[in-house]
Length: 125
Image (cartoon, rainbow, N blue to C red; front, side, top):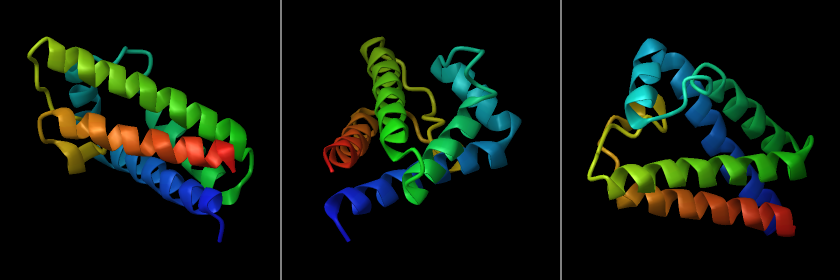
């Protein structure tokens, strides 16, 4: 298995878990996302986009496009988190539904940096 394939599977799994856990959390996740500052129009569609991106990465169907979308989403998520931290706010992450109810912190930025690096490996492969 190549590094690119391994990175795609790892990144795809993260996106599948993130999207699936948001769907499973239902209205609780939507409330957390709004508290974090996610734009209202994004909240109902984000879990499904994450699931689609994760599936595309794992199955290699449209993998390059999926890796670009993943990187863009992760950069947007990171900017949102950094913005809240700069304001001194620490709402729940809402990143992985009920699994991530802990307040945001710099560890979330570091995790996203690792996921962005995986997207770069996929694109370089």
